[in-house]
Amino acid sequence: MIIRSKAPLRIGLAGGGTDVSPYSDIYGGAILNATLSLYAYASIQTRDDGKIVLNAIDRNEKIILDSEEELPIDGSLDLLKGVYNRIVKDFTKRPLSFEINTFVDAPPGSGLGSSSTLVVAILGAFVEWLKLPLGEYDIAHLAYSIEREDLKMAGGKQDQYAATFGGVNYMEFYANDKVIVNPLRIKSKFLHELEHNLVLFYTQTSRLSSKIIQEQTDNVHAKKSSSIEAMHQLKEQSILMKEAVLKGEIDNIGKILHDGWMHKKQMADGISNASIDAIYDAALQAGATGGKISGAGGGGFMIFYAPYIHKYSLIKRLSELGGSVMQYTLTTEGLTTWTV
Image (tube, rainbow, N blue to C red; front, side, top):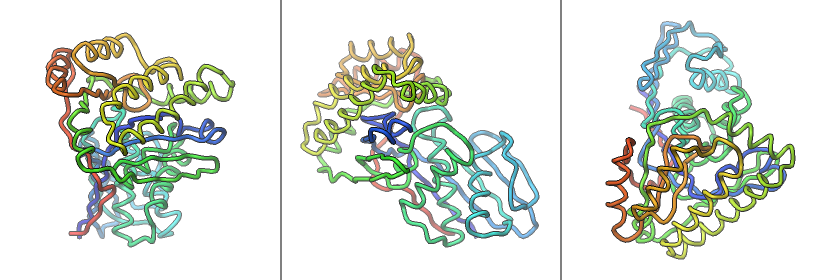
């Protein structure tokens, strides 16, 4: 028996960073994001030899362990181990024997939520295998708890919910881990236009988001007014973005992205750098009306909005800068699981 799952990666269109505590706990956060046809995959095959095989195919990393109730968190495939440990602790109460293979369409540190999406995919495979009674909110919250609480990995809350629910969502974040996911019913022609004009560009660099997120958190704790005001403005951008996509005012998206990017850079040092600024300026000169880093910042993927036919001149210019333009479609489905 083989159990499979896949969960989509996401781009944050507005409000990124306001889902991170303590800002979301104190002021409430809001984000608008959309999932892409880039995925994290997990496949489980049952075994009866008392072994656990963990194989991250994209990372070329494989380990074989004896089946135990708790696997050591030691820096080797900890995301896989963390999900397994929580499944045993909360549900089976006994060790399991299996092989799990994972693959992600984007590298770690890309800014598309790859780590959290992988946790959702792994968790989804276990839910399918063990027939666990977990709904979408349950899975997303459990994925968040595993990554942020069990594994002590810094970050926000949007990635787990985007991967689980899929589609274009306006998400609200409050104290006590309260999250409200509002799926947006966007006319298909507006979605097609958004998809046509958004260009996804990989800078060929990755970054360690934890340092940026920690500084952002410290700025809120220290009540640094410039950083907090930037987050307030980002939250406002998410409302403007929601209105633009629902009303079909698609060409306003470039300006909203641009304004949001200007505010985002004020949240913490390291969100941008000379290389990113140079790429951004070149994109504007090539016809983009706005853009931003996807994720915490510092590297990874960037998105740009280019109306009319400027998309093609933008792609040509970006291709000259050493990175790569990624082809994608916007998706409507979130976590998907099945059994072979």
